[in-house]
Image 1 (tube, rainbow, N blue to C red):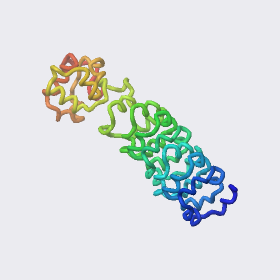
Image 2: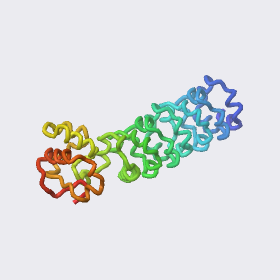
Image 3: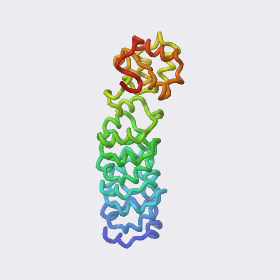
Image 4: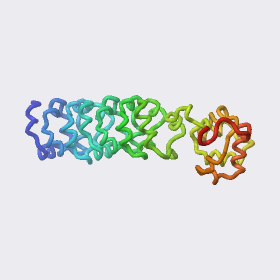
Length: 273
């Protein structure tokens, strides 16, 4: 009887052997007292049938022990009702198995509390389904640590809603740990003053070492694949030096200009018009 489970508290759940948990259906889970959830450990969660997960409500999820989160795999997370996701906190999210993250759908992600997304880690983010990330709102993304954000792949970033994408760009000050393709998705081509998103220092190194042989394939690998198409000449004036380019050897600056086919003053400079 599903209603017979209402009286269950922590101790009876703890006394239920893990293998017996397979007998719980979603209606029985739904009627468990939220305070009884503390009795679920990793093995007991893992033993539940995936179809029973739909019975969990947000108040029940809220009372699960963070150390029990390892019991959720892809199928069990997939089975949770989207409204139950509001019960997760950051400590619980932090303890979810990275491989289980593929079970989240966009409606589930949409309902995770913004404070809870602070618990996401890089390897968890990497495993989120590319279509599911459409559920992220700006505040959920900006709540993540920068390290967690670096787990996003280009195919995921491409699907983020515009405000979430902008929030990511606003929060991250240094994209050195992000893939080049992710940077390209975040930066509009019209905003790329030099036609690329790579490290200028890396570009300078290539230019200084082998300006004559640098080619599009190499520039592309560094995030500068559009540079030659965008710029006929590069201007390095007083504003550039004030911003820190004075540390770049003059030979490198000259070589960069040669890569782009000219050394005259053009309509573009490193830091603006």
